[in-house]
Length: 139
Image 1 (cartoon, rainbow, N blue to C red):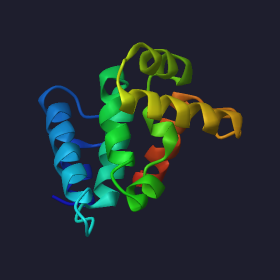
Image 2: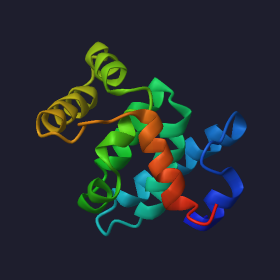
Image 3: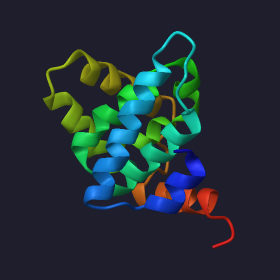
């Protein structure tokens, strides 16, 4: 599946079983991207992260982080803000509560980005609207 097919099939706000399929697709692409040649489709990965961002399920934060940290290309393609579909404060609290090295790495990156001003005027709704315009410019 590519980015266009995923957008057509799931839209920007998948729910239920479709949301589980997006998670599976992101996990599979993340594994491919972790290969030495980076065989994942980073644009598809980014779209999956936007779809999960819109669902605002805190348990998806680490899945999005794994995708973002799969490679340098994925890191550049997937915005750090996509970890924060539930909001920055709730995401920071969630990551702080997890006792996992990857949760700590994600939290430290969020804190550095916040200190650098990357979350100035951030809102999940505003970010979602920006991505809706990006993915469906003619709508």
